[in-house]
Image (cartoon, rainbow, N blue to C red; front, side, top):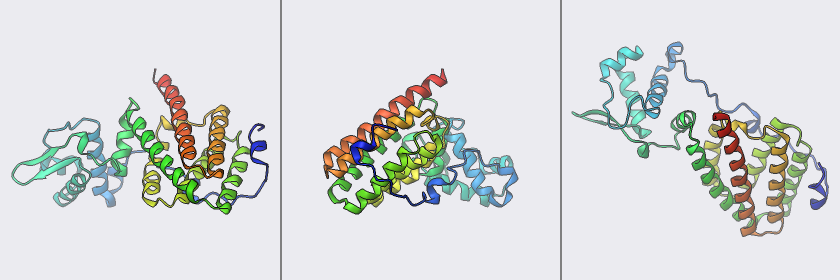
Length: 271
């Protein structure tokens, strides 16, 4: 694809294969079939109740059905139900009070960094509001990490990013392949920043977002890859100049601009 390499100076360096964590299938979006997995009934009960709470079948402030009712509904013992309630309480979905029963908590109490909670919220939100929040968080964290990377990046690390840019350029017509390379490129910059907490947060929530129906519409046409590639090149140039503020701005513009396009596309598909 013309328009990218000349600005960088073409060097077709080989890249190591993407890590298996970036190339293996993402999160399975299918619900847990609790009746077919007796060895993991507790996990299945938690998943089912999480879904009922997040989707409003059990609204905030309402009491959870009594233990005998839950035991009958799920065909499990009281010990399984009690352990499940402890896990749901840890997720911020309900509160258990001795003598007062169990009460469903409102969304502001939910732990959205819990993978099960976040996955359920994503799958049940047709407004895309959760994605707006996710993108804002991603842009803020990645901008900060790019800023830090620009202050400490080595020549060897710049060479590695340049090599990835070249490989991505050769994959512009490969929609699925470019998506994987895109993730790897962003994660490499995050790794170079040394900000382990921010990187861990992104790595925990990104697969859940990517596995969703709406966010999976990214990189579905060649123009998506071309636009993303321009953003990747812009980020690289700022890192090569060791410009922290420039790198942060380039990352922020790249992420937010792309999301506006994908969001409009997703909303159009919803009618």
